Length: 133
Image 1 (cartoon, helix red, strand yellow):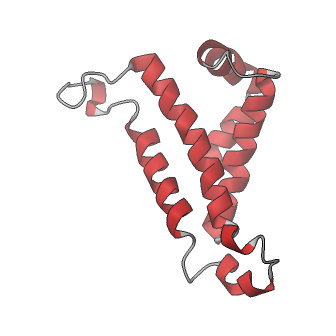
Image 2 (cartoon, one colour):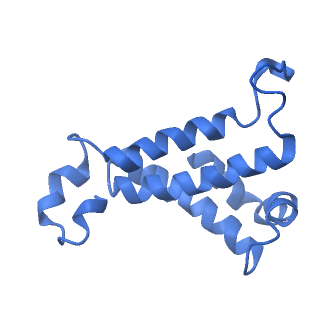
């Protein structure tokens, strides 16, 4: 996910023009703000997830970007005849986004596990933050 965030930051105007403006025109505020927010969510959220730091919050942020990616692929290419269609390169466009969404959803529910920074320091965190660690 980190490379997707870096890619967005390297061409905020292009991503905003060809994706956000065309497929998500209903979003409020400046659309470049949404592109930038998605990019930083993908970069920072991935790093935190990798380290096992604020896992649930990171997974929720990353899952939200995948909801929009899944919506984009649905609007752009549809289901492509799934489940019985034969598509170019034998890969449905929405598959990767759906898989990431499933993984991030599981991490949101289950949390980081015992080998994470959050688990090591959970008891020292404020009580209100502990469920998100």
